[in-house]
Amino acid sequence: SDVCSSDLYKRTEYLRGALESVLAQSYSDYEIIIADDSGTAASRQIVSAYGSHPRLRYVANPSTVGISASLVGAVRLAQGEFIAILNDDDTWESELLAELVRPLLADENRAMAFSDHWVMDEAGQIDRDRTDEWSSGAGRLTLGEGVVPRGGELCIKNGGFPVATSAVFRKNAVDWSLVVPEVTGAYDYWLACLLAASGRPIYYVPKRLARYRIHPTME
Image (cartoon, rainbow, N blue to C red; front, side, top):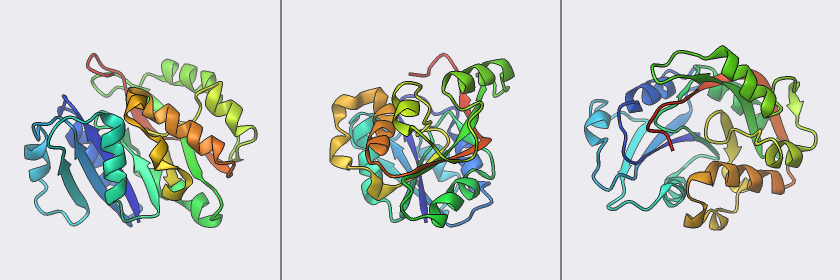
């Protein structure tokens, strides 16, 4: 099974859309852990609308601990072999889990599978020009399907691994003791570096399987 963790702090207005995009996945063997780091259980009412959904687990931190510590706490609760992170203001296409779990099941040595993603505005409209610009800058626009050559270069130089948007990775491929609070908002880049440093193969699927939202309240 797979774990989808949405890490909440101050905003809740996009959470429902993020949740709906996970629940609409064609791949069905997963659990959702929602980590609410607001210190006020700000999203409890939104999550309660789903009742006692069998796939959904809501965890409200008693006080704000920071995104990296909150993520590590959610991972510790995860029962599955794989981890997928979805921030509350982004969404997945319905085939993301199916497409990215497939190459991991095909080779147990692979640390991660990732894809490209769309960039959208505050209202959810796709910005095609910015999407192409970001994909090109990250080295993904012309990258073919398969194991990524020179993964460290793509990760460190280009920031090409969208770990918190469109990726699924093995929980045991990360040394979680290294995901320390000082990482703060750069936790996704740090995770990407840890996965690259593992030396295990990383697989790319050349499809846009998620939507990354740009808006005024983003960090």
